[in-house]
Image (tube, one colour):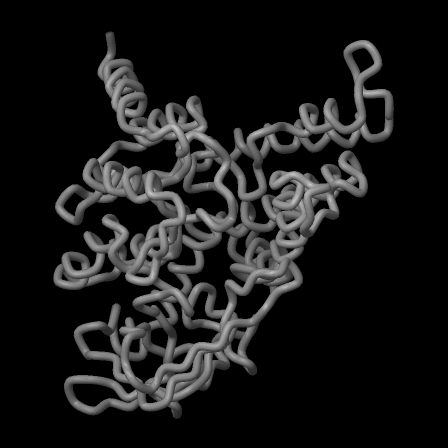
Length: 399
């Protein structure tokens, strides 16, 4: 038996023994775990599952063990992903701590910053939000105007951020601020970490078309950012900020799972959904046009996942790739939207359920997922921004 086979047997046995039964089912929206001091565990077994996985370091499987991670190799991580998928195990926790600021601190953080923040992300003790976009700085992010004034051992921060996902539940925010107003706009920006539990920070949720309010406006009025929470060099935060966006796009596209899952993947495949809602003639769907759409989406998904795996295998650093993440973010978003549109056609009016006992919980989730998929071309950088990056940085086309 090879080392990897032994590891698989170990993982399989541990999961069978430690993953609670209710954690082997699709996760309802109100049971998604983001961690932090404000987390409410509607299902007590979710906390048990989180604690067990965190103790193994498997909430952040590839992070170094000295910071609380699992220290797994890339191949071991993929084995863990496969074995969790085999029993339909839920992710014990998710959020920006794992997909964005954690990997960025591993890239750019000081040793003190890593030891302070990473173990608390792994354990689910703290939850993070992102302070990037502003009312006048969206796709042109470098136009941001939130200012941080140097006051010796700390900065005083004033400004407004918008679309700060999860700010109403977050303990900390990583944010871009302007520290040198006279410098060229890309050079006068710094990357700082801000404790959300302080006077001068006001959060107002923004309700979305899907009915939820994960996005917020965040107002900073003389908020404090300590100097030890400056990540990277003063006035050179744009470099750190761009790298974080690559980590974000990698997570959005499913690249961090090695092609194992996508953002809008569900437990049941499109053919399984079609079998329930449309029925079969013999061994195939009666609607030939819809049948072709399903086949095309599944073929594109398979090719996309294989390309993800190849990209990760070719990435010498073993972590998040560079500009190529824009390729996966763009195409993955379009693929996910296409899948949800096909599911809408399959389910008909049952895919438009909002409330009431005439719709199942799965059907209500499908409605919200379909609406949420529309943001795929915006979140993490618009599709237009991604195409520009691909043109310039991947293909090397002239401006």
